[in-house]
Length: 203
Image 1: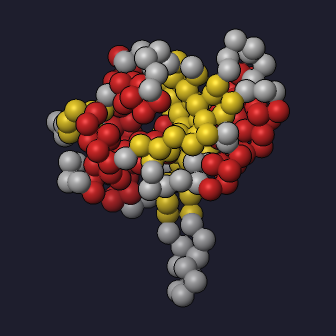
Image 2: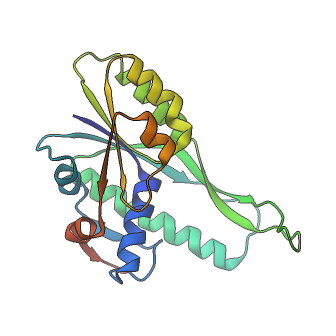
């Protein structure tokens, strides 16, 4: 069974749950998690092939506020350690996009613009790989761990090829568009996330 995971999406969901239950103190900081066994239990499968899509951190070339710079450094270090953990779990990691700084739209009240972090490129690579997988007749089911509506055209293409697409997501954040175009939706809850959380390390 092939599993495609939008890394930023999944890690954000996991961090949200762990933060809500006071297991971690910062959503952007590194924490360890047994992702492979977690997915095996969620999907009720003993043998799965996981491709995890993540981003490269794109440092801005211009001066940015110190608070944002520190946040980027924290995310970058957490991402490096997180990827090392996934590699040790025999998970294929694909660096498909960038997390970069951009200027937000102006505030509707004061028109002030702020600098934010934005992910680019992961959805395009995932969509491409999903369609390519649909050409592999040895695969009967594809698990999609992403709540990005931009992937709906790829989901439709995979379905037309005869493959089953199962949408995997956190029970509290189901994307109705992705769910409606997938043949099956599998969700996980807080208890399962906490079960496979293996610690927070800030050193």
